[in-house]
Length: 135
Image (cartoon, rainbow, N blue to C red):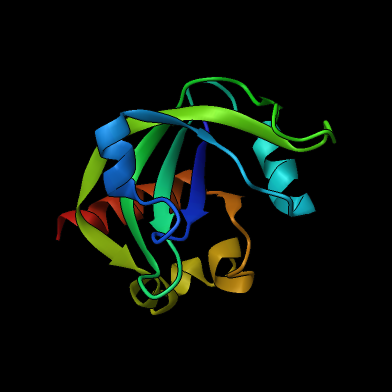
């Protein structure tokens, strides 16, 4: 299993909406590096649902329930999507400020390339985010 972070502007689609819907198609990504990461995602992987914009915080955990497939709404087959479902809400959100203030995150893409919408999360950082959310 691999771990990921997926970002979404909460005014467009937020974690609470996903909780109500239970599952959705993760789409709308066009950045080449984000697409490269998405092509590495597999059914059974987990991801942090991260609210961008004014919030800038990790809010929940989602399960990737399909392998990536071409976006049926796009004519260019390099644009892919996959299906996700809710795994659980973090006990409390973990903010970007908390992450940036912790030296162990200094080389992570979230800190170095804050506009990237899909990225891997090293297991050690995944475990630390989950721990931070429980404090």
